[in-house]
Structures are given as C-alpha cells and as structure tokens.
Amino acid sequence: MSETNEIDLNKLHHIVLRETESDSIQEINPDFYRNLSDFIGDLKKQEFDGVESKIKETIIDTATELTSLLINIRLDKIIKSDNIDFKNLLDEEKFILDAEEEQRERTEMILSATINGKSKFLESISQNHKTKTVVIRFLKEVDEIIGADLEKYGPFKTEDIATIPYENAQALIAKNIATKVRWED
Image (tube, rainbow, N blue to C red):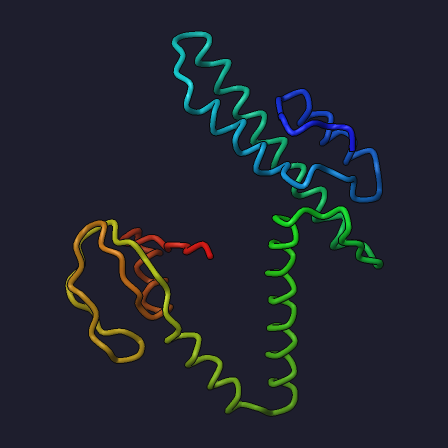
C-alpha cells in the first residue's frame, strides 16, 4: 500500500487508474473513504470568488465522479467474481455488499414460498412489510393520517420527525412531503 492518509485529486486519480488496470481488488488504506470525505468536505467549506470558485467546484465534481467510478469498479469486481476475496475490501464496501446479500436472500425466500405454495407466508411478509416502521422528517405540514396498521398518526408540522408504517412513509416520500431519516448506529 503506497498511498499516505492524505488524499488529493492526483492520488485519487492514481488509485482509480490502478483499480481499472487490474482484475483484482487493489489494496487501499482502510481509512480511504473517510479521508476522501474529509478532503471533499474541507474543499466545500472553503469560500472563493470568481475563477477560484469555479476551479474548486470542478475539483469537487471530479473527485465525486472518480469516487463513484472507484466504488462501482470495486463492487463490480467482487460481484462478478466466482471466488469472493474480502481481504482488500474496505468496511464501507462490505456494508454495501451486506445489503446486496440481504436482497438475494429475500428474493430466494419469496421465490421459494411462491413455488412451494406458501401463500400464508407471503401474506404475512406482505403485511409485516406494510406495517414495519420507518423514521421520516416532514417537509410540509400534514394532518392526522391513518396508518397501514390502522393507528392514528399526526398531525405533523414541518421538520417534525416521526416513526410511521412503511407504506404510509413511502407515499409521503413519493409526494415530497417527507424524507426518510437514516439513523446511524
């Protein structure tokens, strides 16, 4: 591992280039994404005028594109690999892959229940999913609503945070009335 903890656009470009030139996942500093986040965050905090401001925005855009490309290349390698080797994956990438594994397991569960005539199980999954709760933040005022679980929720004011059934949350999010809140452990 040759890069230091500090990230700049040249180092990021070099890391992406190295990754594209190899069929295997390349070793990267375990703190890479956090260091990159600090680099981009620090850039965003800086205030410039005129041409310097445009240069800063171009650097941020380039770093964003390179980051997206790097993540996608690395995850694509692991997804297409017959022999999954996690040793060079970063924790953030493992977090992404964990969600994909969960999706595969759920797909298999639904497929199995469907082809094995387990309609009651499917009904149970459906009902549990509709009524599972989601934390949302309201972007607009909302009168009282009846949830998918037949409970009353609200009324809500702008910026209120509430836990409501998934089905209701999705409807509010789709109408840009609320946004999902992600709680970090």
